[in-house]
Length: 278
Image (cartoon, rainbow, N blue to C red; front, side):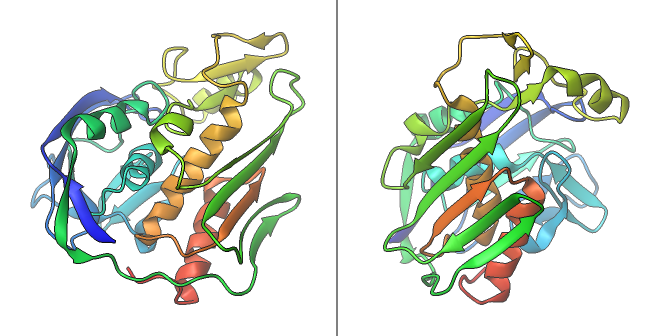
């Protein structure tokens, strides 16, 4: 397949989930083979941070990339949108340390990409290989793996004591619409965890406007966009994290109760095995 970039500039402004800081983002067309990368335009010398697994610097409740002293946090939703919509090359300029959470999903990003459209570029994507043997990453009963498969697929399972969430599974193939089936799914949190997370300096920008919140009596801010919106959002996160490989190897990616940390460990293992080129 040919490489693609966006046909015109995209801009968004909003507050970061963890920092509570408002940032402005400009996504610009980028040259062939440049990949997806961030530019901290608020810092001296405009440091560039590649959207690659080798640049991951932190995975606490989001994925953070860094290079030198510069970093950018909560990159997974935008990167999932770019990957899901087929954008291989993009320059992402940001004037702060964290991507805007917007409505908690990737829908605003995918809508923006759809509005400007894509441009085909005169070079093919690098070839990614097929997974031949299972690759497993696990911690206690949580796991993520890449299994040999005839086509690429993402399947995810979650299990929560709160009855409004409970046990959910969902499976999605890139042959189906990312914009319709995965992008609208919003991030979610548990009511009893919010005070603790805020005390530890996290989710300063979280609200009922940008995240689903679930308590013992159900959702505080319904309605849901899908009956299983939480697990679809986990697929969104997995796509965003694995996009740091530039391309997906052919595999069935299967996860259960996993985290950004486990996602990134799988990506690192895939890179170590030479199944992708970045």
